[in-house]
Image (cartoon, rainbow, N blue to C red; front, side, top):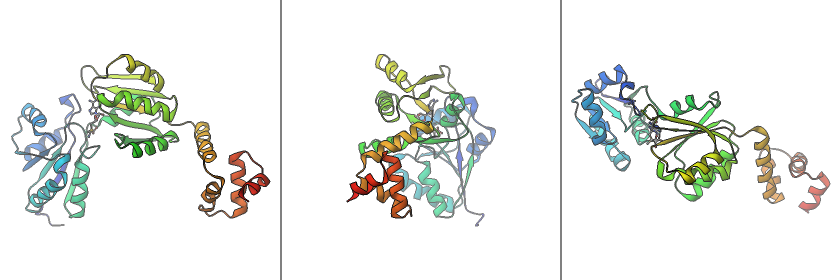
Length: 281
Ligand code: SAM
């Protein structure tokens, strides 16, 4: 590796409480040649608070490809760049992911300075299983893609973590309840701030609550995974909605022969093998 090239430092910044910043991040922000920030007007408050005078440039959703090329050029010239986002760990549900990928492609060294991250903070407060979890970030806004993800989540057995903005919360909770059924959940907002709240509730209670109350602040939703019996039930429902030929194909595509597939299809649909055979004629 060419040691004269600069490095990209991913610097985690507080999600509410400024004291959560690490010494390592502060030193790096002071020593970097340039700080790339998602919203420079927002980040200037952080820099002022810690008396950091490093020049800043914007790196956000709408310039993430062009700006990444410019930052990579600077790092090639030997400049060290620190990346910060509005809050939390860069590259988690923000444009940082693109810059990191492009740096790897261009052989630029990237290092990550860990720190606050809203999804992990919420998970640890949730009281739900932390042994196996999956992070979905924001659900996609496109109808078709969103439906597809919600359907996948309905049989997800790991604890699921989602981000949501206040103006979309009601709608998202309703869609989650419809797709996943009623589940335990933790609704976390204002994490690490004065009015931090982590409500241990259920999807249906949360839907009712927000029919009467206006959501405030940014939210993290932590939802209990599907229970195995429910997963089986959901799979069975999906099979029953399939034409029997497609159901057979499903198992044959997994390498089963016709006889084995018929046995599985019969069990899934509550039929005898003979009945399956007759329906396939
Ligand atoms: N990179 C960030 C991280 O490490 O968590 C997340 C960036 S994403 C654009 C912003 C979302 O994170 C918000 O919409 C909200 O869902 C969640 N979030 C950030 N700060 C939060 C806080 N203090 N309390 C609750 N949720 C927060």
